[in-house]
Image 1 (tube, rainbow, N blue to C red):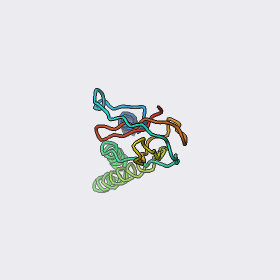
Image 2: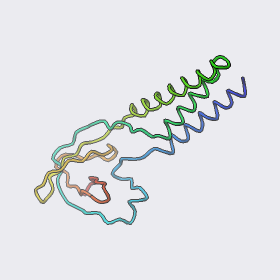
Image 3: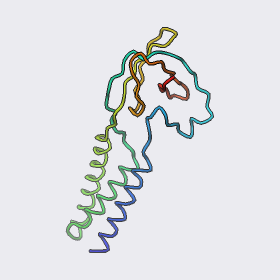
Image 4: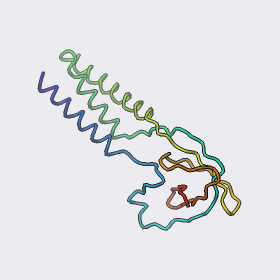
Amino acid sequence: MNAMLGKIGIAALLAAGLLSGCATSDSSMVYSKDQMRQAQTVQLGTVISVQNVKMEGSNNELLTLGGAALGGLAGSNVGGGKGQAAGAIVGALAGGFGTQAAQRAMTKNALEITVKLDSGKMISIVQEADVPLVVNQRVRVLSGGGNDRVVAY
C-alpha cells in the first residue's frame, strides 16, 4: 500500500511539473522564442476604450493525458481482478475529463483594448492584463507572425 501511495505521489509531482512547464503567456511583454529576431509592423494609435475581460484556459493534451494516467493509477487500487481493471478505466476517464475541465476553468484577467490607429482604422486586441493601459493613451500596435500586441508608446 505504501509503495502505491509513493507511486501516486511521484505521479502527482510529475503532473505538477508538467502543468508549470506548459504554461504560456499572453502578456504584451513576453515573446516566444519563435518571435525573436522577427520583423514586426509598428502602427501608432490612441486607446479609445479598455474593457476588463476574462481569458479562458486552454486545453493541453499532455496535462489531460497526465490526469488520465493519475486517475487510472488511483482507480486500479479499487477491488481486485476484473474490478481492478474496471476501476482503472473509470479512474482514467474521470482523471482525463476532470483535468480538461480544470484547465478550461483556469481563467486569466485580460483587457480588450480598442485602438484608433493614426491611419483612421479601428482595431481591438485582447491581451493579458499585466500592463495597465488607459483611454487616450498613445500606444504602439505591434503585428507580425500571427501575433498582435498593444504596448505603451
